[in-house]
Length: 93
Image (cartoon, rainbow, N blue to C red; front, side, top):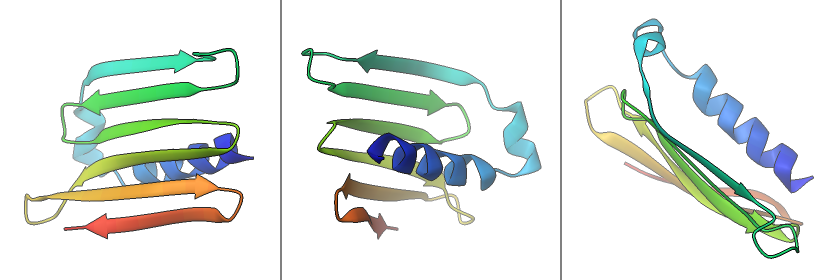
């Protein structure tokens, strides 16, 4: 369930990309799973257009953050926790 919440959040980030963002290049993609045999994972993606995504967690919850380029050129940071009670984002501009 929590993995699906993370996937939906990442899809929302990708859907918010404009046409010019299509030309962006992948800088970093790291995906480590089952780090301790108990379902832990760590994910990080960085793109040249300023989008950056980090997440880590296990079957009990996920915490992460992502950065989006704002219209004024400043980055928007969203931190979140996703657990049995839902997806809890916090936006910082």
